[in-house]
Image 1: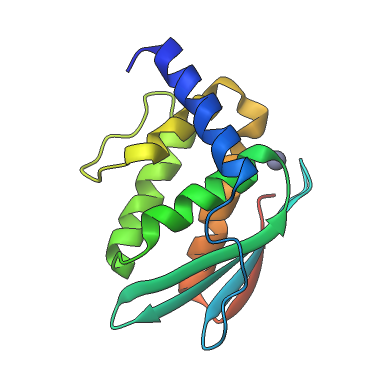
Image 2: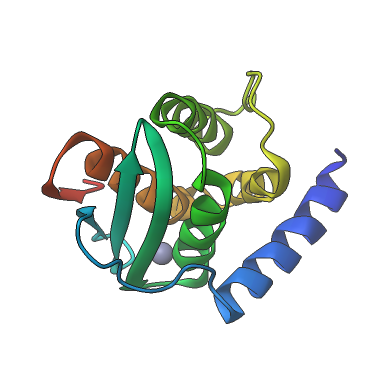
Amino acid sequence: MMDSELAALYQDVIIDHNKSPRNFRELEPPRREADGYNPLCGDRLTVYLRVEDGHIREVTFQGSGCAISLASASLMTEALKGKTVNEAQALFTQMHALLTDRNGAEGDVELGKLEALAGVRAYPSRVKCATLAWHTLQSALEGEHESITTE
Ligand code: ZN
């Protein structure tokens, strides 16, 4: 994808998901949850998960923060629903590479719309906004109730 195309896609996707975040609600128990906080920007997210038979049946989030943190969380919940826990871990690894590695993500997972978030690499100070939801997800997958911070 050309850099200019990526920039335009990035803008569109961030604006869309910030305006109408998907799966923005608390999940009824039984659930796993984790809180994430990015002190650099003040973003706070809670990610809720329902895992059954190794599959993510439901994934939702709540919180407040900048457009990038909310859009990233919204895109994440859309991408994860129905995936196995192993697939979610693979997606986490690939997204982390996409967002933090100058060379981009090499992997076999189809990123689809998530690829738009690669545009954040042009704004290094915002990378932690984009990765917050993913770190919080990781924490929710691992424990019953955890708090994480990006620092
Ligand atoms: Zn932020």
